[in-house]
Image 1 (cartoon, rainbow over the protein chains, first blue to last red):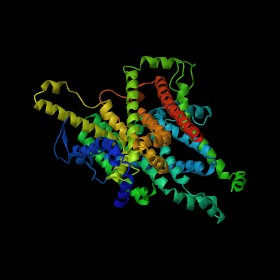
Image 2: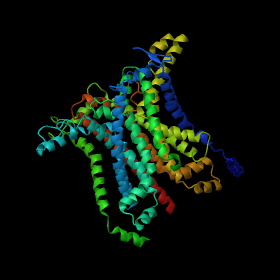
Image 3: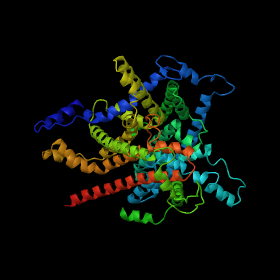
Image 4: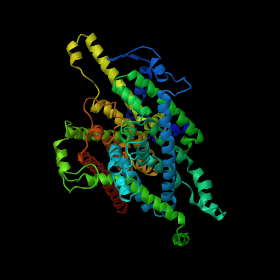
Length: 304
Length: 301
């Protein structure tokens, strides 16, 4: 490494232009992350050990915020609030992950292997990504005219005499939360999986077909293993978003469904910052464990 | 090769039609709901949040012009636009500079890369809470120092350092910069350094090399980064929620309205902000096309 740098230096020597060193070019970005990401995380960790009362937070070293979270969690008979909330959030995670994975994989597969011209691929891919650049809240409230008590779905079902009373579980329910998650975040599956599939050498598929593989076997034994990186990256996105979500669960659950993110949001609303910080640290630990587990499946850095 | 491809074109497997159907349904699923609120925002004055349409009018847009309830929607609108513009400029400058840096190796490059990825996938509520806490502690420190140094009146008048262009700006950058950096990675992965070497051989300074060789080549992607910066900032809620002072951005106001407003005025607001996002996207796409064409034309000359 050192010798290579040395040789470029000697090459540059005759006409000496001052080039900005690489670390200097990266400094604005690095500083931003340092000030608004690393420092805040460290402060969150510190404050999670502080004390508080109704008016202020008090520097201290106490484990009471963590104790409060796991209060009565040792009881075997009924589950404590924290475990219940995590269980509910993990359940959303699992459902949303499964649905977005199947949907994202199918859409990406269609785009990568069935659409034949690059122009068409670009257009269809853009169609899938444009909603990502619009507001999530608006995309959530746009379900109201469809799923509400007097919404289009209920009107249609009533009109067809399939039901006598409007279905109540369509909106502000677990169903609508999952629907909104899928609606908002399938994007995060499609993009990395599509990206991985575009790198697959097409001759591999032809070879598999020539060797007598059915199209299902080609998907199962060629495409799927080679898209693994994309699948893992997409899964990390979807799972971390759903784990920390408070907005979608709030708006689509009619503010009635608990989630880990919502606990933190409510606690900051009551200015109980150390308690919120402790919850954030535990959430962070859980998310890191999940991400670590997923990266065991595939070495992402090697593939980037 | 060409002939073989053409022969294959004739028959599509059955799976194509199933997947095409799925894709069509997915697009309907993506756009259908938003289209319904577009339509419903033109609801007549008597109309409600759901179909049927009771007449067609611009009534709810004129209601929106007067503002919604006690909330200063247009103040929030102006704040969001200003913030998004600043975020766009900083995202472009920082990402392009960092993108150039990552073409070489530098100390700590792996750490910077991992931090960027971590910032991207970190649950927003954690980032937001952390930034909020940091600024609150900063406020306490400022007040304490002012009191300790005898500036009691300053300490009494001081409210907070949290605000649009401090904490909220930082929160937005933690979200837009990773996207900017990833776009830059994608560009420079495909970048042929021969052009630059040619420039250098012809005696171009590093700045001339960047200005006349690198920038025209990466130009379309830089516009892409700008589009990410603007649209992501314009709609950001989760990271801003705990890191904003007393004055909310438009999406935060909109989120507050979802629980209280029961008239189509909220759809009018939704239509308006979505149209703005779409306008920015179309503008960026046109700019990309114009740049690409100009480059091709220059290459032909």
